[in-house]
Length: 458
Image (tube, rainbow, N blue to C red):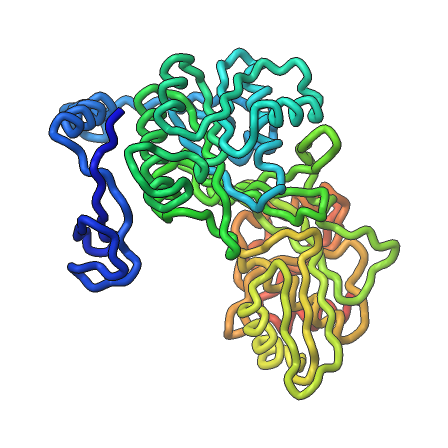
C-alpha cells in the first residue's frame, strides 16, 4: 500500500504547514502542529463513502416521532465491571480504560473476554505490548487453561482492521492504543497523531459493524490518559483504574458513560487467580477498632448509585509557626476552608495545630457531603475523645456555618443501618419521614449545633 502524503495541522487555529515547525505560521502558537494525512481524491471519495455507510442520510424527524429502544447489554461475567459499564458491553460501544502500569487492566480484560467467549460471543484480544505466548501464560496463571479467546499480536492498524473484517468478532480489545500505528503516517507509535488517527479508525469500525471495542490507554505522571484529550471525547465510555499497586484492592471508576451512570465504581480484590469483585466494599474502607478511638468518624458517601461507608481519620497535633494541612483522599483546599468555618462558627481553633486527614482504604472522596464527617473527626482528635460506638455522619457545610442536605440521604441511612450503625448526625433537610429501624437520628442545621450535640453524646 502506497503511503499517503502528510502535512501538519495546528490544533489551535487549523492552519497547515508542509513540514513540522515549533511555531504555527498562522497563529504563532508554540508546539501545536501535529501530523495528519493528506488524502488523494480517490482516497477522499472512499473515506466519504465509508462515512456515508456509517451515517446514512435520513429524513428529519421530531423527537416524539422517533421510536427509541433500550440498548441491549451483554454481561461480561464480572459483576463489578458490569456495574461500571452500566450493565455490560453494548454493541458498537467503544470503551477506553486507563490506569497505572501493573495495576491489572490486562488481567481484568482477559477475564472479561473469557467470560464473554464462554457466553457464546466471538472475541479477539489484540496485544501490542506482549507476545501471544505471554498472554497465554497469563491466562493459565488466572486459571483460564481452556480459554477459546482468539489472540492477535499485532501493532499495524491496517492488519488489525483486516483481521477484524475477516473474523467478525463481537468484542475486540486493543491493548494498548499507544502501541498501534498506521503506515499512512510517518510519526512514531504513541505520538499524538498516531493515537488520534488509530482511535478514530477503530471507532468508525465499531460504529459501522456493531463490534464493541475496548481500548487500553496509558496514563501520564499526573494520572491523566496519555495522548490527545480528544480521545476521551471520541469514545462512549471512559474508565479509570485506581488503587495502590501495594494494596490488594482496586477501584474502577467511570468518568464518562453514554450508556450508564457517571462516577459509578467497581471494587476488585487482586488474588492469585486474578481480580475478584467485592460485593460489600464498605468492609474495606472501615477499620475494625475494638473500641472507638479519637479522630475517627464514619462517613456514608455516594459513589455513582452505590452508598458506601468510609472511615475518615483525623490527627490534630501541636505544630510550629507554620502548621501543616495535609489530606489524603480528600480535597486539601476544602480542608483549609472547613478549618476556617470550624473556627469562626463553632469556636474550635486549630491555628497552631498540624491537621492531617485521611480516607481509609485509598478511596478518593470528592463529594461535599463529607464535610460534616471531616469536621467531627477533627474535633474528636483535638479533644482526645472518641465519637460514640456505631456513629455516622454526612452533610455539606457552607461558609456561613449551615449544614446543607446531601443527595439520596435515605439510601445512605439504610445502608448504614444494614451494617449495624445506630447513631447518625445528619442535615435536618435529610430527615426521613419514616424512622429508620434500629437507628437514632439527630438532625442539625448548623455546625455549632452538630459540635455541641457530639460533645453531649461522647
